[in-house]
Image 1 (tube, rainbow, N blue to C red):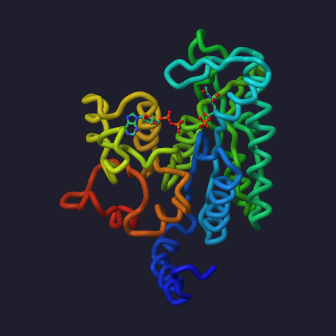
Image 2 (cartoon, rainbow, N blue to C red):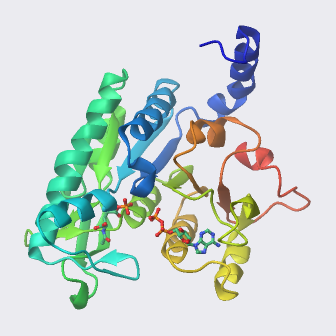
Amino acid sequence: MNGIFSNTDRAEVLTQALPYIKKFNGKTIVIKYGGNAMLTEELQHQVMQDIVLLHLVGIKVVLVHGGGPEITGMLKRLGKKSQFVNGLRVTDRETVEIAQMVLAGKINKNLVSFLEALGGDAIGLSGMDGRMLMAKVKDESLGYVGEITKVNPGPIIDIMQKGYIPVVSSLGCDKEGNVYNINADTAAAKIASALHAQRLILMTNIPGLLRDKDDPSSLIPQLDLDETESLIKTGIISGGMIPKIECCISALKNNVSKAIIMDGRIPHSVLIELFTDSGAGTMITKKKKAAKSAALKGNENHD
Ligand SMILES: Nc1ncnc2c1ncn2[C@@H]1O[C@H](COP(=O)(O)OP(=O)(O)O)[C@@H](O)[C@H]1O
Ligand SMILES: CC(=O)N[C@@H](CCC(=O)OP(=O)(O)O)C(=O)O
């Protein structure tokens, strides 16, 4: 169990994390967890452990989750094929019912029970609870896919004030009682904006934003809004990465300090991102500081 690290090494690591722990104490961090990054219970256990730790050191963590692969799996078991248009699931009435069962029923409660088993206090909600995520039809051809019209962060704030970790599934509603299936990256970005979060962290199954999407070693550690927009124009950012990046851009333009895209499968990637000089994945900032090394996100991490 001691591995290659001595207790002194471990104590040293903790000491180095102290300024960051102090920095983020009392701050709001919205973490989106979903997709292939949460495929196995082992991966979920690891990420939930980190979230409990963040909560215990006084960081206000909000966990927003998806579960696209699980929805697809359940639909398949019921003999229904999944169809996506620009990354969004075409959602008929039956599909939205299944999405609700999987997201608000299974995944949400599993994550809450993981957090609690690890010593955290968590409360699970869907975006429908307390009319947190009000939505309307995004595009008739997509059925019950929701476009968020209003975020009411009240229930999340209340839960955090009572000392719980809010765990929110990406469903929305309208005044007529319709339920909407909402992309979890979008839900997380809107919630982060409504909470004026210090960080929006999108966990995925790639290292972050890559200069060459087929070369994992071409990670771009940091870039600003202007650079991000020009990478979309030049086609370096394409496909499934476009909506993800657009969520980050929207969050940064609306009250969020920094957005990070990172690989949620890497052990303790959230802790590495928040508590180390180098960070993890790609950090998107409003404006890059002059004369700052792109290889080191440390100074930015202190902002
Ligand atoms: N510049 C880029 N860097 C990284 N990934 C990119 C880039 N451009 C396009 N992509 C594609 O975007 C995908 C990530 O989006 P997606 O698979 O929809 O994520 P998720 O399932 O986590 O929501 C990657 O698998 C990759 O193929
Ligand atoms: C409209 C839409 O596409 N909704 C998503 C909601 C879940 C999600 O976003 O999950 P991941 O983050 O795991 O992909 C879906 O049905 O798959």
